[in-house]
Amino acid sequence: MIRRLDPRLSGLLVALAVLVVLNVAITPNFLNLQTMAVNVSQVATIAIVALGMTLVIASGGIDLSVGSVMAVAGALAPIIFLSDWALANPGLGLVASIVLPLLVAAVCGLFNGALIALLGVQPIIATLIFFISGRGIAQVLTNGNLQTFTNPDFTWIGTGRILGLPVQGWIALSLTVVLALVVRRTIYGRYLLSVGGNERAAVLSGVPVARVKIATYVITATLAGLAGMIVVAQNSASDAARIGQLMELDAIAAAVVGGAALSGGRAPIYGTLLGAVFIQLMGYTLIANGISDEMTLIVTAAIIAIAVWLQRGRRS
Amino acid sequence: MRAVLREGHLAVWVALVVLILFGVVRYENFASAYNLSSFLGYNSMFVVISVGMCLVIMTGGIDLSVGTVAALASVVAAMLSPHGLIVALPGGMAAGLAAGMLNAAMITGLRLPPFMATLATMLAAKGTALWLADNRTVPVDWATDFTALGMNKVANLLPWTILVALIVVVAAWVIVARTSLGRTVLAIGGNAEAAHLMGLKTGRAEVFVYIFSGACAGLAGVFLASGYGAGQPLEGAGWELAAIAAVVVGGTLLTGGMGSVPATVAGALLFGLVFNLLNFENGRGTISLSANWQSVIRGLFLLIVILLQTRLAQPAAKT
Image (cartoon, rainbow over all chains, first blue to last red; front, side, top):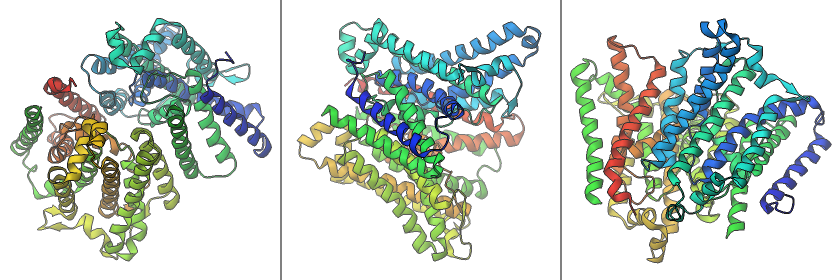
């Protein structure tokens, strides 16, 4: 594992280590469980979506619709567990309120994947459709209202703690490990990288390109749906207009800082997790030390540009 | 290929005419001076950013920064508005130009992918806009002539902004159709390497499209500040996608190498028209679609256009 470490990944690890040391030195209360928990709970949803985005980018595509998928899944969950049926059957209701939104999210991914793989629509355009209409669908579902609720069982996925750290952090971490194994050890993983690396060669060597692409968009949308429910659980409220807004950009940034190349063919899953953590920690460092939000945006922009530039340097 | 192109463009114009006729027949106030001027005033912003986006997409690139750059320019223009339009208009456009130069430098100088370079500029422009505006909307100076651009109308009908937008459209159209620069732009999108090997000045053309797009976004920002009386650092979210959608609806493929400026304008107007018609339909009371439905219907509209286009473009797409 250590021996196989990508130089890009080790560069990112060094940068992260520098940030941590810097924070220990200058940021008050940095080594504090509460600080950790806040950071973890903020980065977890971005990381979960970014993992899916990494797969899509590895296939040579992009998914702009993740934020809208989050909004749809996040709007749907409270609607289900607040329904009369679920109130009468709390156990089943809870299961349904987690499973159904994920299924709906998967169908959104199927829609994206079918447009891209079967009709040959460019990913950015195909996912733009659901980017535009998905949030509208979520708002129609909720009548544009903020839904607030108290449901301790459901909100556990956003507010619970295991060993002192937020549940969603553990979810993000386990998904990272699982997807890293999927990319490295499964046929799907091989196919994915070959589709992104050289699509024509993949077609000629008999890779089921269309199925691989569709599966990738389905996985990404399902992960986005999960992230949407976590956000809703975290707030004990669902606001269809806001859940997951600009998430596509955060996720793309995390994937790219983690070493994904927009040209496809590379799926640095651990890198993506580190990329998300790096962006989060950088933002936290700046804000905790009194630097304003708007400066943080400018610094994030610079980090993205530098990360992409470093990748180009390595390849050429 | 050329036949497919024409057919694709024809569809946009036919759709535009059909929707306009539908509106005129169905709603009595649709053809009123008030509706026409407010429609054109609002959409002039989208027309200019779509034209800038069109040129970028012709090269096979993309510019995600136009929305926040427009917001930045609106802040700059509002801050300069006490000096009058003569200073605030070039000032706002200069902010857009600067952002365009930043994009061009990253894309042609550092060879970053356009998607990522303009994504970085998108964030940086938003940060700069918020910083300049101190996290607030910036009121314009009403005592000067600055708001005349966005609020006054020629013959009480045509807003000045749409006339300025028209100048931009014609300029872009002439550049694409009649100059070697325009031909180079299309050649880059067709095959960048071949264009470069043929001795075309591809770097110069690429620099030009991003700077042009930045200036268009700057102009849209000036329209925004002038027409709505404030520099708005948080406006412009999603404008880049509206512009991309307009370009696509206008029949320009994102792979570049082809496309039409007038059809892009038609695409932008078509997109705005869908909204306008929905508002009228709601006004009649026959249906009551909440604002929430509008984006759903916009998305469906985009889906239909794309499905039609994939059928039209399929023979040409096999490269």
